[in-house]
Structures are given as structure tokens and as C-alpha cells.
Length: 304
Image 1 (cartoon, rainbow, N blue to C red):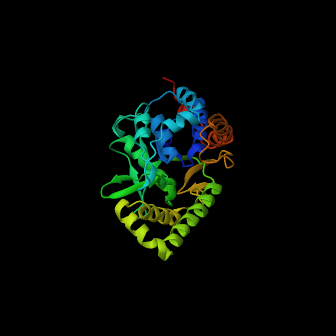
Image 2 (tube, helix red, strand yellow):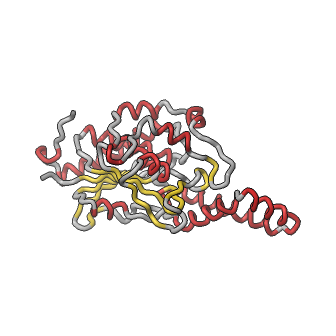
């Protein structure tokens, strides 16, 4: 029996295009994927790939996404809970993603964050698009997803041990595609810290307090955004995978770290660059997989 391979695709917004380069290299080397654990953009790309879409077509489609096409996917919203409602994105994703987890070609585990209780939610059954929509919901940018009397946001903000989950799922080999960046996390923290402080200063101004109290009570706009922001700042971690290199529980863990740190989270026009960086970063890691585990009779997968 061949080793079971678990693939972890992490969060990083536009940098997540690099996951496509990693998947391309895995396909080129005929390394099978037994299941995918996806967080944020990793859940989105994981769901599209696990739905059975041709990888070359996926790559072609994302290369064609420009700023104008991206804007058309965004339904801007009065910011009660987030600036983007997300319905248009769900509709767009329905062209690529299967309806239910049971229909996926590769088992998928999508990670979201319960913003009310500060815990992870792991989706592996039910509607796939709703799970992905929850996992990619950057706080304040997107409205949270309502789920079982709580609110779900981006899975990247929770300190979640994806490697531990992969091993519990039976993986002998864990391959991680890490596209995180500390730069955006620091900017996020600083920007929203300043935002919250400005709102507090406005509210402390006696001449404006009555106006804002009446406005907030009638519209219920900023208080929930402030709550979501404050909770997000507490939950954010610097590097989800920094302690997972090497062996864990006698399993092999391989970390692919594309050099995408300088690409900002919103630059969805950098698909080509990110994909190439993912492909390049995957090459030496896959060679390590071969060195430790490769046997033709174990890993060879005849292409359909």
C-alpha cells in the first residue's frame, strides 16, 4: 500500500495563485493527492481543483482575470458587517465548484473561523461554495457567513494546526503550500487599530455623541465591524506553519514556500508571476519527496 498524501493549501489572498504552480508540479510528477486541507484562498483553489476541473484551464482562466473583471465580481455593500456582500462571488464560483462535498473528486477540508467564539470550523460535508465563501471572508472586507447561530470569517486568522489534522486524517506524507506574508498581517493590524481608535475618539466628542449613538442604533453599522476587527486582531498569528517543518509524529512534512512575500494580497493581476513562483518553489521540495519516498510502484499514477 502506498503512503497517503495530504496537501495543505494555506491562505494569502492573491498570493494563493502560487498554489496552482504547486499543483502543476505535483501533476507533472504524478504524485497523487489523497485529500486537501484548504484555508482561505487555499480552500477556494482546493475546491476548484477537487471538483475535477482541468488544471491548465484553471490557470488560463485566472490569467485572464484583470482588475475590471474582478470589480464586476464584487457586490459593494453598506458596511453593516463588511463592505462586500459576496453573492456575486458565490455565483461566479458555481461555474467551477461542485455543489456538495460528496461530489468532489478529491476529499476537501475547508477551514473557516468562528469569529464569535474564536475557534476553527472544519467543513467536509454539505454545500461546498458556502464553506469556501466562509473560508475566504476577510473580516470587514466581506460580510461574515451566518452559520448555526454564529458568524464565520477567513480561516487564516485562527491559530489552526493543519498538519495535526492531516495526520489525524491518516496522511503519511504532508505537503504544505505556504503563501502567507507577515507584511500584510502587520499592515492589517496597524490599519484597523488606527481605524478603531479614530471611531473611539469621534464617540468621545460630546458634541457628536448623540448624533452617532442615534445613527448607530438605527443603522447598526460600525459597532459590529469594530467587534469583528478587534477579535480578528487578537486571533491573527504570524506564521501558521513555522513549527511544522521536518518530522512530526514520525510523518514526513514538506513545506513549499513560494517567494511571494512581496506581492500584496489584493494584486490579483499577478497570477502569472505567482504561478511561476509556485512552480519554481515546488521543484526542490518534490525532489526531496522522491529522495525519501519515491518508488515507481508506489507513486506512479497513470493519467486518465
